[in-house]
Image (cartoon, rainbow, N blue to C red):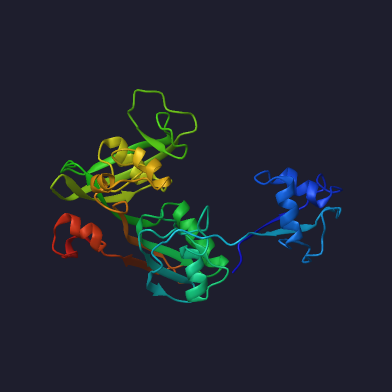
Length: 326
């Protein structure tokens, strides 16, 4: 299984020499470095590695770059299968395992593990969990099943249940958090978003996306609360950003937790023993515990469950009794 990227030459790009095209299109290396990659046979043009720096490109040519092997960060290389048939595979993903390849991760991803260990090809991961979020991931084995499942998610017909450990004592009554998400103007981290309540008096950015999440406190004690979170919409970072803005950040969350500087230090490998003690967990305390969807072939309603992970359970001091929180 090789890491590679490809591009199809369009008519506007035709007529360029190969090295000129590569150098202008991919600017993260200089001309000499790309020349070395060409000489090393890392470029494949229309299935052949014989192309040289002076090869003239034509419209419709397919150029593939075989990326060098990376030393990937360690992850939790494991998962358990909750259900499998000819259309679906439902797995319980551990924390510290990315779903998809990206950045420093390729082989150390759920996508790669499903290919290597389950022999899947042409499959789709329908719901995506953050690397440090554990729980249920739904995969479909072919395009027809993927299309049916994507439609159910888009039409908000899928029931998703999360369990979240948060800092502080969350209100005992249930809470419906309606509002929207947009880039956080007060953060130095580009990908961080902010939850704006529906009744917010301040101006909401034009690019904001509406979101809605229902929260219910299940347990509270020792300065933390266990919540049930039911996302009505499915925005990126929705639960974490909403809880952060409400003043109850997810335990162990480096980006939306008690201090976003934890995220920056984590990226630089500079988290101290005191930082880890303040974070309480070595992963964010968010778990995808339940999923209900109709089978893409039979239409039968199916529901899957994943118990609260031991690390989150132990922080609650429940002595391993996960039954109330499944």
